[in-house]
Amino acid sequence: MKREDALQLLQKYVKDDKLVKHCIATGAIMRMLARELGADEEMWEAIGILHDIDYEVVGKDMKRHGKEGEKILLEERVDEEIARVVGRHNHFALEMSIEEYEEPVEIALQCADNLSGLIVACALVKDGKLSEVSVKTIKKKFKEKCFAAGCLRENIKLVEKLNIPLERAFELALEGMLDVKDELELE
Image 1 (cartoon, helix red, strand yellow):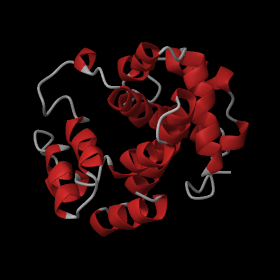
Image 2 (cartoon, one colour):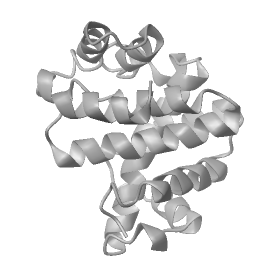
Image 3 (cartoon, one colour):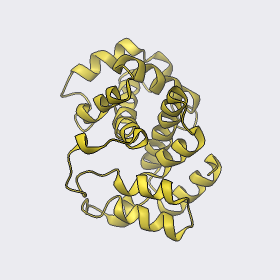
């Protein structure tokens, strides 16, 4: 699935600008993690972009989040693999532990979903200047549990199961997000 097609489909179901940006950032990180692992960059980016396609549809019902996304994607005739990964990304709805994720793409999505929020929070502290965020900044803020508290550190750390050190994941994520900083409306 092409990036433009994934964005168009996302915007059909998601109207909140902040959520669209979160999905773009997650997709950018997924692309970089795929590159690092020699996986399908286009597919992984599409998964990142589409992972929250059902967020506004389910409202606050997190028991349905992910599952509804999979249904939407299948109805829209999106590749079954993309739909399946989106359907499995919300471990709360599946009543499973994050440790149960074994597939590289699922592990990467757990990392990217949370790391995107942490990096955006780092940029906001620097007056929206993503270009002023460094790996050192991310490392420091990662250790501060009360900073961007909604970003689940244990989910980010899952990337180590892929033999990607945490610091390398920070580098890749920052590089990916800098590639789309204009879309994120960050400097």
